[in-house]
Length: 162
Image 1 (cartoon, helix red, strand yellow):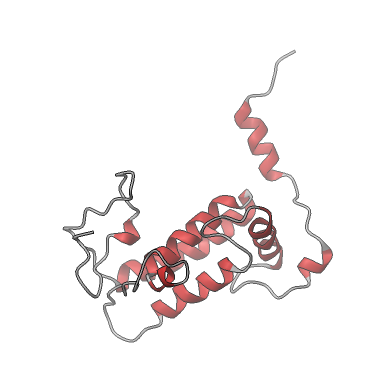
Image 2 (cartoon, helix red, strand yellow):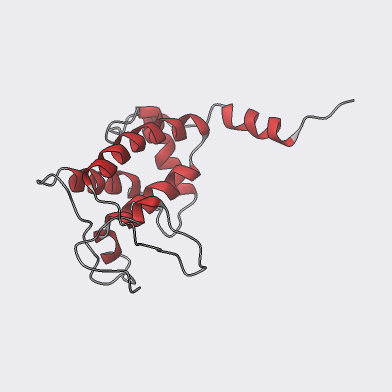
């Protein structure tokens, strides 16, 4: 008897309907997401909390990201955080807010991931248009791997020495 490939098994698992309690569907949706996706986001936040992901983090970080993009001016510079080691202060840096949204995105099942990805693509387009790329930035994490594109934008002060 032929067996199913692992990729086919994962795809079938991602397409299964996810259990959402009725009370979760009655909660107000997260900004510009459907009620079902909002409930799935809440489930993922509660089921697998992590460094950037905890209950309510997606709602809060989407609001921070939108607030930054609503700032006046044609071109924006990213604000720096007072101290990046502080769990609360690091989110003053919009690049870390975007990291948190990316981490939450990876925890979601496929349909919810697609909807949140669409929303983030719209916000990222505005972010790219309103910020200035830093051509000389070679930002890496502590393992030496290159950071995502949203970290390689011009900041309000020089951070290249980090």
